[in-house]
Image 1 (cartoon, helix red, strand yellow):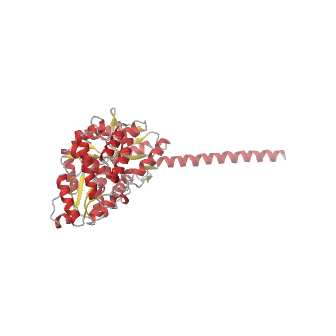
Image 2: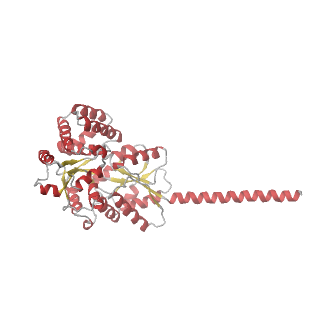
Image 3: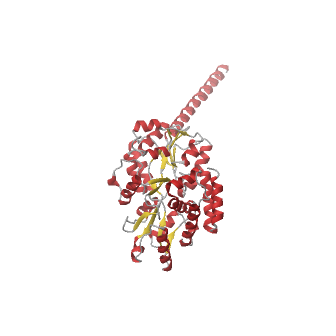
Length: 424
């Protein structure tokens, strides 16, 4: 009996040990699998932008079929919802493998300053990128000589889109100055046509229009001086900009607060509104979702009085600290920054490549025109899209713009802008 009990005890101990070994093996396997999954976090869920992302992910899978990819996109224009989710994850030390972030202050003030990002100088050297991206663009994603993200595209923020049929049928010139804009808007309004489409369900779209007016009246140097604190919001040109912005709002669709940017663009696409001021992701929407043709169904010009200026929005991806699959992230970034990667993504997204050596034949006339303008224009970083000022300042400006859209109080708006600027 004693011998039986001894054998039973040995058997039980062996079984427990074997079970523990198996559990450890499964856990290790699970961890390994988790480490292999590449989580790509973005807000690209709309027409055009989602098409570009999926094409980019497909290219990556072709090159690295053994790496599992998760498309962790969160819906919401300009990343409103995604940024909130990202902030929670980053603060909880649970970053995605890599995430979309606008170059400039959105990257530098939010994540580099907080010590949340790894430098990528070695990747740039390895891929030979130092002379493939414009120096000014590399500077936008750098702090103290360290480069923290890879730009995949360039968007132009200062574009006025218009329905060609409406303008042709009414024999109207496409406005290039504010005087021309208001003259055209008045004539359109008299004919029962909404002059300017706006969808400010999310407040950034109205801020987007306002920053374009500021750029027009201040020029790139004055505009940049606002966000560096060198120029006060008491400046007479700022007040003039606010007054012009307020007048423009008198020509928008009545249901603007219940629409998003795609809804506003749709009004132009369907001929229910004549014009829309939006970045060139709208071109991706017109072409991919609405099936319109460039320079046949819709046209484009720089927003009034900004010819020769280029309001820059650049989407970038970096390497968060603490991720377990850093080598796989760098493989993704290498595809993202390649000519092939940029040329498969940007024609669908509606943007132009961040690289200077892209294949022009892959781009439509809008893309070719924008590439040329990017080379020859004075650049300014977008406020509405996180490049010109830190997130806290942008949040306050968005709130101020939101109130101004409904109340139209110029002095109150300027006071609110001055308060926001105290955080610069």
